[in-house]
Image (cartoon, rainbow, N blue to C red; front, side, top):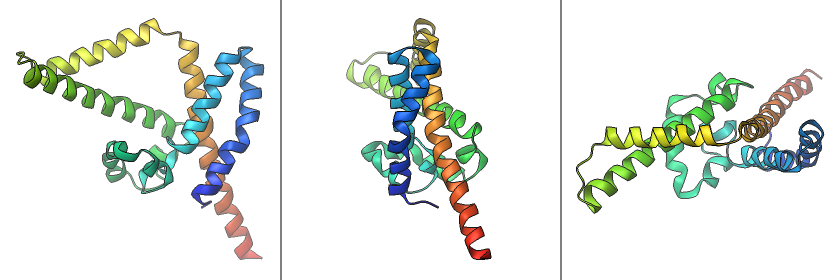
Length: 175
C-alpha cells in the first residue's frame, strides 16, 4: 500500500483538478469549493483507512474514539470500508449515527444532571433525530450532493491508489 504520506500527496495533487471539474460541472464556485474541501477532508481524515490505526485515524485526536467500534467491526480493506460506493456511504451513515448517539447522550446528561429535568435518553435521541431531519429539510440539497461527491472522490482516490499499488507490486514480482 502507498504510505500515509503518499495518500496525502495524492489528495493535494488532485485538489485543483477536482475544483476545476466541479466548477465546470456545477457552474458554481461555492459548490466547487465545497466539493474540493470535502475531497481533501476525505483524503486526510475521512478515508477508508479509518478501519485501522492510521494517519487519518490519528488526525481525529481526542475524538478518534468514535472510530474504535468501526475498527473492531471491520477488517482492513473490507467492502464496507474500502468499497468504491459502499465505503463512503457506510462511513457517512456510521458517522451520523455515532454523532447522533453522542449528541443524545450529551443532551440527556445536561438535561438530567445539570438542569435536573425529567427526561430519558430516548427522548433526547428523538430530539436530536428530529433536529437532523429539520436540518436536512432546510438545507439546499445540491450542497449535500457536493459534499458527498467530494467525500466519494477522496475515498476513491485512496482505494484506487491502493489497488494500483497492489497491481504494480504483483507485476514487479513477475518481472
